[in-house]
Image (cartoon, rainbow, N blue to C red; front, top):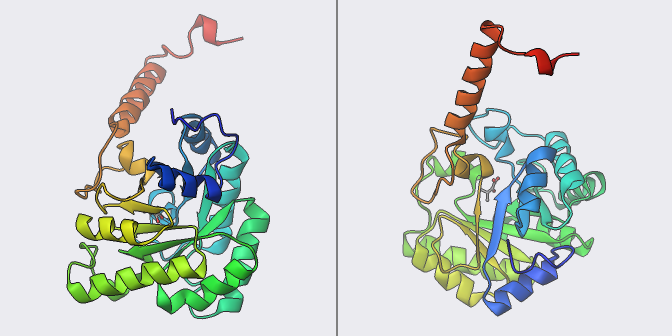
Length: 271
Ligand code: KIV
């Protein structure tokens, strides 16, 4: 349990304080009421309603197909369960790139309909106008740089980003731009650890890593990956804390056997 479990609600201000104090920030994804309730009660600081819902909840190959309505559905389910964690909802692909007015409408819908605390957006200078407009409406924005899965068709692969100097320099520049614009935090995905450390040192806002090394201000993982529900996905940065796939299959197998053997329900399990 975090030493901050006494605080009623984690806010963007609390996250800045954690960075100042040098206490790491723990963030995980959730997409539904039951999981979000457990994750919140276990003391997580930030819950991300990630567009990874497209992969782990809907079975899509990429994050691109998930819609604003679907993200709002997941966001609403999560906020109903959460009492303490800061809840951030991903803005889905196609709802903010290239049109800042549409971006603001999308963000306003997310905030009004889900009651989340903030939105997250992928990209740097190229989406700055959208970020500015959303921030000007008083909506907190978390940035996301490095491997940005919504641009997978541009990258062509999920390999480590910013290994070359030019891309690393652009990433640092983008991180500073997002900080200056007013983003309250930043996710860095799948970049060299030394670059993660450099960004965390050079910006004052909290930097949350996923495959960005240990010298950033916090870590985030997809809950289905860290619990071992997803089985095929095994990047180096992923630590599995459980093998829930085996547990679930074992329990379901036992149930099937009991039903077939007319061992369930027993005398005490019926009216
Ligand atoms: O959608 C998501 O789950 C994310 C995390 C991987 C940071 O953006």
